[in-house]
Image (cartoon, rainbow, N blue to C red; front, side):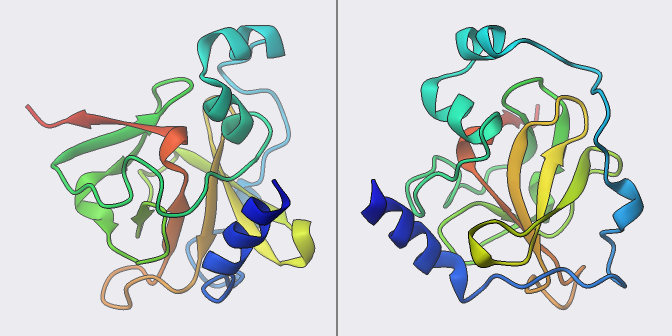
Length: 164
């Protein structure tokens, strides 16, 4: 278990940077209140797989390069695995080589942000705006030709819906 944590931290540590205040991520989007979708822990545990529950509800991180969507580039939309909230369009996905699916922007209003100083790092956590599920973090090292942001997202926290 400890080795998994160390590998996870090492894999993305060199790429983790705090999103600056002048970027798209703004502190006023920070929310601590109730969400449109609320459930008890027992309800979440019965709905989600153990790994989904661990990531979405307990803010854990899946191991790098193991997620279903890391090297997946079909056309469609990514939604929250817990509540179905549309989060990312496939045309915003890019290969960041960090071990997790990466997007350069979220669908407007679909996510909220919170400062995360855990594990001795300064990061910005990204959560589903509808249910509060932990999705991952956002960094300033995304493609400069688009937004410059990288939404580093856990595969287990999202589901892919293909285009029709």
